[in-house]
Image (tube, rainbow, N blue to C red; front, side, top):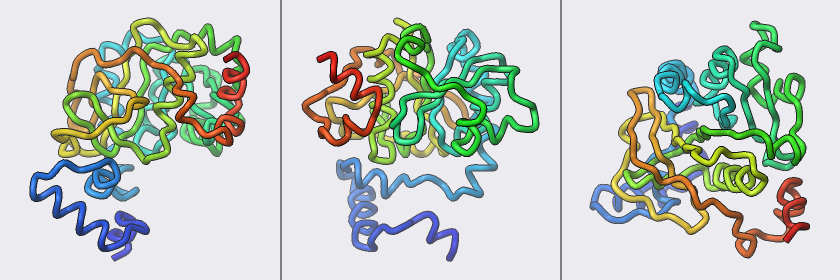
Length: 251
């Protein structure tokens, strides 16, 4: 029962039933319904899978050649963040809610026993440096990896609904922090969460590859054309996110 409760969270029984029925009937689900059908696995299960997923990322050619990588702060990608530092890469992470922009963790500067803590919000502020706009413009990040609840074969993804991965990619692009040939990767905890079709909004970032504990799927070159859609962002949100506020002053 505790595992079931952790999986369903505060979802209403009606929303669960409606989404599952539409899914089984072959209907086109909206994003909220995909979040119901493809909610992340329980924490205990993700902990057992993150190592396999991280090793699969290591096999990706884009990972082998990148010098700086963006990885979101999800539990699913925790071992991948540790590995990136062990592999000599500079790790870019978002601050909580993107409020203060981004952190940069550099390899071989953190005691080995502290690596796991250092790549979480509990430790990143202690071991990372905050990035100012000038530093961001010289990052040249070539690989960005974010957790997704589900992904389709056209690179469409659905996340937790807060839009932080899409916004982080757009901010980094607008500030000159991405390489011209950057690639985006959606990380899922189960291969079964590769689905037929996920409706996308115009600000959504499509992914070039899918990463799971079972392997990597190459979808094609969907990245590019990133921008911040200012008219779609509430003024309150722009003010809360420091790099957004700074960019808005330049508009």
